Image 1 (spheres, rainbow, N blue to C red):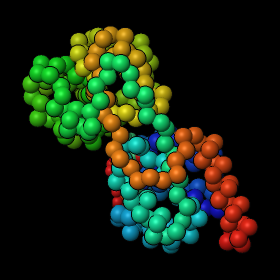
Image 2 (image 1 turned 60 degrees about the vertical axis):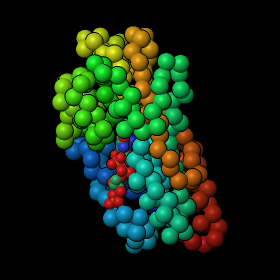
Image 3 (image 1 turned 135 degrees about the horizontal axis):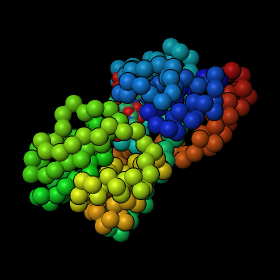
Image 4 (image 1 turned 180 degrees about the vertical axis):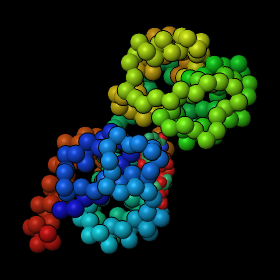
Length: 243
Ligand code: NAP
C-alpha cells in the first residue's frame, strides 16, 4: 500500500509518522527548514502533473492534509483523484467556532477593508497572505510569520516565530504593542489558539477570515481516523487482488 500525503500541517506530519513506510510526504517547499523531513518537495505542475505523478509512482491512495487555506492544491488533489480513480481523503481540523466579539471576513481583502483608520493591528495570517494589507498605510501592523515575508505593510514591526504560543506571552505581546485589532485566518486547532484567548481577555477586536470553499471530499478531523481509512482501503485492495 502506497499513500501520497500532501502536507504542510502538523496533521500531515503526524499522519506520515503513523503510516511509516507506506507514506510519501510531499511539501510545497515554502518553509526552508520544515519540522519533519519530507520525502519530496515542490509543486507537481498543476492537477495534471499531480495525476501523472500518482500514476507513475504507483500510488494506491491520496490524502490531502494541507492547510485549510491552501485552496489550489486541494482543488488539484480532487481533480487528480478523479482523473486517476484513486481514493482521496482530506485530513483537516475543524474551524474554530465563531465567538461573540469576532467579526467574520469572507476573505483577506475584506479583512483588510474592515480595519478602522488608526488601528494597531496584530496581523497573524502567514507570510504569503499580506498582500491586501500593504496598501493600508494609515494603520500600524505587528506582523508575525514563520518565514520572512517578501513585502511588509508600510508601518509596523515584524516578528518571526513558530507556534505553539502561550496565552500569557500573547497577552504581553499585544499589550506591549498597544494592539487594538487582531486579524487571523480560521485555521482551527490548538497551536495558534492562544492569540484568540489573549485578544478576548484584553478586549482586542478579532477579525476572523473565513476558510475558502474547497471541493467536497470525504474529510476526517483526526490522524487516527485517517489511519483507519487507509487500513480500510488496503483491505479492499487486497480483497480485490490489487496489492
Ligand atoms: P496553494 O495555493 O494551495 O498551492 C500553491 C501550489 O503549491 C500548488 O498548486 C502546488 O503546486 C504547490 N503545493 C501546495 N502544497 C503542496 C504540497 N503539499 N506538495 C507539493 N506541492 C504543493 O498553497 P499555499 O497556500 O501556497 O500553501 C503552500 C503550502 O503551505 C501548502 O502545502 C499548505 O499546506 C502550507 N500552509 C499554507 C498555509 C496558508 O495559510 N495558505 C498555512 C500553513 C501552511 P503545483 O500546482 O505546481 O503542483
